[in-house]
Image (cartoon, rainbow, N blue to C red; front, side, top):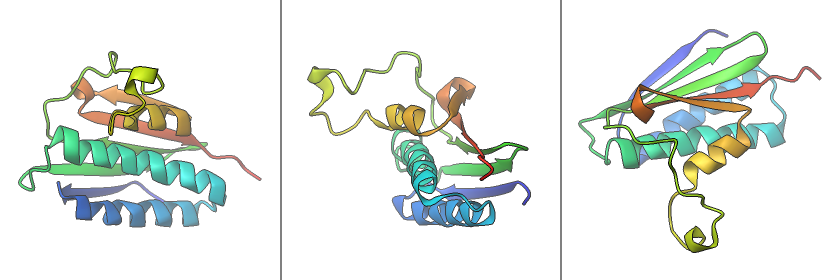
Length: 135
Protein backbone atom coordinates (compact mmCIF):
# COMPACT_ATOMS: atom_id res chain seq x y z
CA UNK A 1 0.00 0.00 0.00
CA UNK A 2 1.30 3.45 -0.80
CA UNK A 3 0.92 6.82 0.86
CA UNK A 4 -2.58 8.27 0.88
CA UNK A 5 -3.79 11.80 1.55
CA UNK A 6 -7.15 13.22 2.52
CA UNK A 7 -7.76 16.96 2.49
CA UNK A 8 -11.11 17.85 4.00
CA UNK A 9 -13.16 20.80 5.23
CA UNK A 10 -13.07 21.39 8.97
CA UNK A 11 -16.43 19.89 9.83
CA UNK A 12 -17.07 17.17 12.41
CA UNK A 13 -18.92 15.15 9.74
CA UNK A 14 -15.63 14.59 7.90
CA UNK A 15 -14.30 12.44 10.73
CA UNK A 16 -16.16 9.55 9.07
CA UNK A 17 -13.92 9.92 5.99
CA UNK A 18 -10.87 9.58 8.23
CA UNK A 19 -12.42 6.51 9.88
CA UNK A 20 -12.81 4.93 6.41
CA UNK A 21 -9.11 5.53 5.72
CA UNK A 22 -8.11 3.95 9.05
CA UNK A 23 -10.43 0.99 8.35
CA UNK A 24 -8.86 0.47 4.92
CA UNK A 25 -5.28 0.71 6.23
CA UNK A 26 -5.95 -1.68 9.11
CA UNK A 27 -7.66 -4.14 6.80
CA UNK A 28 -4.80 -4.01 4.26
CA UNK A 29 -2.20 -4.54 6.99
CA UNK A 30 -4.28 -7.16 8.84
CA UNK A 31 -4.08 -5.21 12.10
CA UNK A 32 -5.50 -7.04 15.11
CA UNK A 33 -8.77 -5.67 16.43
CA UNK A 34 -7.45 -4.42 19.79
CA UNK A 35 -4.61 -2.55 18.08
CA UNK A 36 -7.05 -1.22 15.47
CA UNK A 37 -8.96 0.48 18.30
CA UNK A 38 -5.81 2.27 19.46
CA UNK A 39 -5.09 3.50 15.92
CA UNK A 40 -8.67 4.63 15.31
CA UNK A 41 -8.96 6.53 18.61
CA UNK A 42 -5.54 8.20 18.34
CA UNK A 43 -6.03 9.33 14.73
CA UNK A 44 -9.60 10.54 15.25
CA UNK A 45 -8.50 12.44 18.39
CA UNK A 46 -5.85 14.22 16.30
CA UNK A 47 -8.46 15.05 13.64
CA UNK A 48 -10.93 16.22 16.28
CA UNK A 49 -8.24 18.53 17.71
CA UNK A 50 -7.42 19.84 14.22
CA UNK A 51 -11.07 20.64 13.47
CA UNK A 52 -12.11 22.05 16.87
CA UNK A 53 -8.98 23.60 18.35
CA UNK A 54 -6.82 24.22 15.29
CA UNK A 55 -9.30 25.42 12.69
CA UNK A 56 -12.04 26.46 15.16
CA UNK A 57 -14.61 24.48 13.10
CA UNK A 58 -14.25 26.97 10.24
CA UNK A 59 -15.41 25.03 7.14
CA UNK A 60 -13.38 27.41 4.95
CA UNK A 61 -10.24 25.94 6.53
CA UNK A 62 -9.10 22.43 5.76
CA UNK A 63 -7.22 19.72 7.56
CA UNK A 64 -5.20 16.94 6.01
CA UNK A 65 -4.53 13.36 6.97
CA UNK A 66 -1.60 11.64 5.31
CA UNK A 67 -0.96 7.94 5.74
CA UNK A 68 2.62 6.79 5.13
CA UNK A 69 3.46 3.12 5.40
CA UNK A 70 6.90 2.38 6.77
CA UNK A 71 8.82 -0.86 6.76
CA UNK A 72 7.82 -1.66 10.34
CA UNK A 73 5.34 1.08 11.20
CA UNK A 74 2.23 2.93 10.09
CA UNK A 75 2.43 6.73 10.30
CA UNK A 76 -0.57 9.04 10.18
CA UNK A 77 0.08 12.79 9.94
CA UNK A 78 -2.72 15.24 10.74
CA UNK A 79 -2.28 18.92 9.95
CA UNK A 80 -4.57 21.92 10.34
CA UNK A 81 -4.49 25.58 9.28
CA UNK A 82 -4.73 27.02 12.80
CA UNK A 83 -2.23 29.00 14.84
CA UNK A 84 -0.68 25.99 16.55
CA UNK A 85 -0.28 25.50 20.30
CA UNK A 86 2.34 24.94 22.95
CA UNK A 87 2.41 21.14 23.02
CA UNK A 88 5.17 21.12 25.65
CA UNK A 89 3.02 22.80 28.31
CA UNK A 90 -0.30 21.00 28.37
CA UNK A 91 -2.18 20.52 31.63
CA UNK A 92 -2.06 16.97 32.98
CA UNK A 93 -5.56 15.49 32.45
CA UNK A 94 -4.93 13.00 35.29
CA UNK A 95 -4.41 15.83 37.80
CA UNK A 96 -7.40 15.84 40.19
CA UNK A 97 -8.22 19.47 39.37
CA UNK A 98 -8.53 18.58 35.67
CA UNK A 99 -10.56 15.36 35.95
CA UNK A 100 -13.93 17.07 35.56
CA UNK A 101 -12.91 19.23 32.59
CA UNK A 102 -14.68 18.28 29.34
CA UNK A 103 -11.54 18.57 27.20
CA UNK A 104 -7.78 18.33 27.44
CA UNK A 105 -7.38 14.59 27.01
CA UNK A 106 -6.70 14.29 23.25
CA UNK A 107 -2.91 14.59 23.30
CA UNK A 108 -2.75 12.46 26.46
CA UNK A 109 -4.76 9.72 24.69
CA UNK A 110 -2.61 9.92 21.55
CA UNK A 111 0.59 9.59 23.60
CA UNK A 112 -0.78 6.56 25.43
CA UNK A 113 -2.30 4.76 22.43
CA UNK A 114 0.41 5.33 19.80
CA UNK A 115 3.98 4.08 19.85
CA UNK A 116 5.25 7.59 19.12
CA UNK A 117 3.87 11.07 18.47
CA UNK A 118 5.77 14.11 17.23
CA UNK A 119 4.56 17.65 16.71
CA UNK A 120 5.75 19.93 13.91
CA UNK A 121 4.93 23.42 12.61
CA UNK A 122 4.26 24.89 16.04
CA UNK A 123 1.78 22.12 16.87
CA UNK A 124 -0.22 22.45 13.65
CA UNK A 125 0.95 18.99 12.55
CA UNK A 126 1.16 15.76 14.52
CA UNK A 127 2.78 12.53 13.31
CA UNK A 128 1.34 9.45 14.99
CA UNK A 129 3.32 6.22 14.61
CA UNK A 130 2.24 2.66 15.26
CA UNK A 131 4.60 -0.32 15.08
CA UNK A 132 3.55 -3.22 12.90
CA UNK A 133 3.95 -6.52 14.69
CA UNK A 134 4.32 -9.54 12.45
CA UNK A 135 2.32 -12.39 13.89
